[in-house]
Length: 165
Image (cartoon, rainbow, N blue to C red; front, side, top):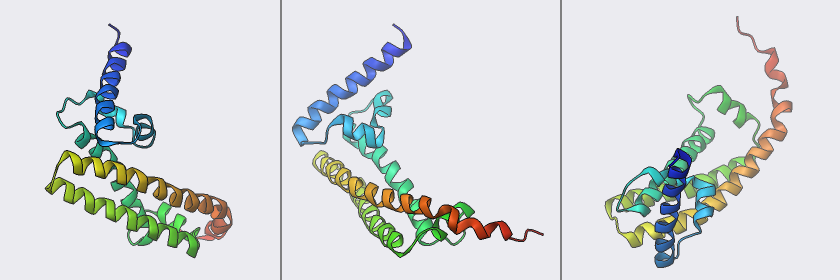
C-alpha cells in the first residue's frame, strides 16, 4: 500500500468516525470544519475522544487570532509589522477588532470551562457554537484586513523619511 493510500484511508476513517458524531450531536459538516480549521490533520491521532481533538485543533486557531488581535489593539512591544497595520486602521476597524476580541475571549473562556468540565455534550456545544462565532470573527478580520491593505501605501509614504542613524 502506498503512503498516499495509507493517508487516504486514515482520513476516510476519521470522516467515518466524525459522521457518527455529527449524527448524534448535530455537528457541522466535516468538510466545513476542515476547510476552516484543517481538522484532517488529526487523522494520525489515535484517540477515544475525537471531539476533544477537534476542539484542540480549533482552539489553536482561536488562540493565534486572539494573540494577533491583542497585539493590534494594544501594540506595546509588538513587532513593527503590527504597528504598521495599526497605523493603517481607522476607528471602524478598531471597533471591529474589539468585537472580534470579545468573541475570541468568550471562546477562550469556554475552552477553559470545557477543560475543567469535560463531557461529550459540552464538547459538541463548543464545536457548534465556536464554529458559528468563527464565521462572524472571520468577517470582522476580512473587513479589517481589506481596509488595512487599501490604506497601506498611503499610510506608509512618510515612513521612507525615517532617520536610522
